[in-house]
Image (cartoon, rainbow, N blue to C red; front, side):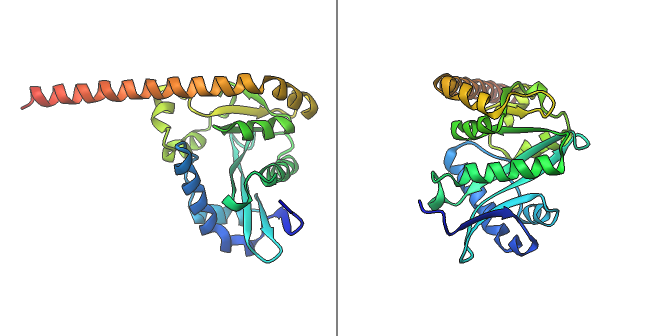
Length: 232
């Protein structure tokens, strides 16, 4: 796809006009995948734009193409590049990677000492992160800020996260540590060699977590039915 008419830049106050369309596409995309990202309101996206913590891609004639924003946690010791979304007609064109690179650069400028992390269910996003120097990690290496984890409540997989005591979920955690990390060339090369293994691992993990959740729901339903019988 020709990208000569697409501009990727830091979002400005004028871009608030796109907030409703962006959040609607975030929700629609999550439903289509059957997995979720934390739901965000148009007001929340607008706030990120006004705080100069967002990157947007737009066409030269004024249509939005993609978006991503920064969230800081744990007294700015952790940063997440969240809400990455690309309009359907521009997907698989390299726009997502370009936005990720721009928001990563902005995060490093604003929070040079912070660890940058992400949660994703997609192998494509894992590859983009690896190209930037992220590495897969356990959830224990992420922020323990309660406000961050509270943001997962709107995700369709929140029950799994809770049942696993926030130690695991459908998402894979990835982290960039500015004080201790491999160079992007190294992480990208490693991901390329291990991509089939990562893909298989993610499918196995997600399949087992779904079975785990279904068993818990069945058990809970059984207990409810028994409770109802005892109190008939």
